[in-house]
Image 1 (tube, rainbow, N blue to C red):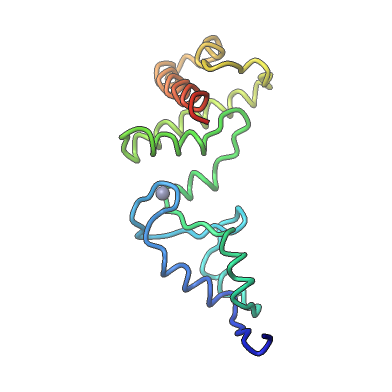
Image 2: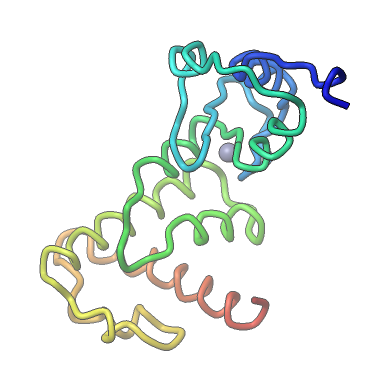
Length: 169
Ligand SMILES: [Zn+2]
């Protein structure tokens, strides 16, 4: 069997993989510019070029399961979201799959929740104060005066997501 093992550089596999991807694996959008995420890290062209270790098909098949091809929009959210309260990735995915919202509207919601998350972190808001399926109710008195309404709308959407999660997951 050993003689049949064809070794190729990992970078070669990655380049082929990149060319083979047509749609974002999070939102399904057709990819124009793509971001490759490997083990939770974004890898750019230069990083790929440096991955020159020789591997065979079997190793590649395993590695492939840890790769994700994302559009710029999804990769930005993926790489810049370190929320501690809200599950922003799952929320974004919910909006994509269960609503007919546009990318720009989804981005708005994500940005608002990120800001809220930062604020709650800064206040050391206790996690246990967030419970049930209405975080809007839990955070009623925590909302900043500026943009209050926008945060409310985002939180109500988040409540819908929590309700959906409760019912279907
Ligand atoms: Zn996407």
